[in-house]
Length: 90
Ligand SMILES: [Zn+2]
Image (cartoon, rainbow, N blue to C red; front, side, top):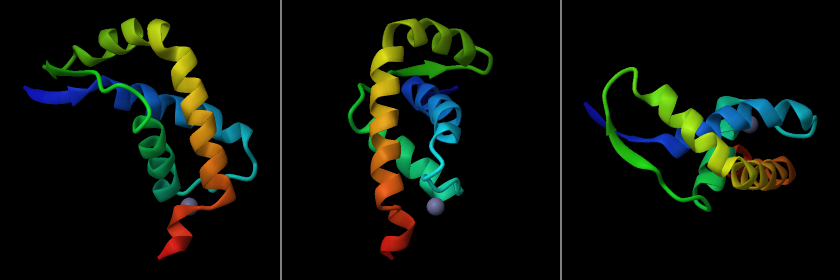
């Protein structure tokens, strides 16, 4: 068993769905996770204690409820990272 933030899975799945539509955004793993982190900071955490196999049904349940917010925040985060990729700020 482990503590799991289902919002994290939902956000990452939308980063993967939406970022191909933006030619300007870097597709490296660092930027992918930066986008997810920016979006997650503006979304509620959805923690629960899970066992393997339980995660998928939880995401489907949440998706209907939060899809509009998730798309809005992920799109905003993609725009921020495409203007100023954080990997360049070293
Ligand atoms: Zn990058």
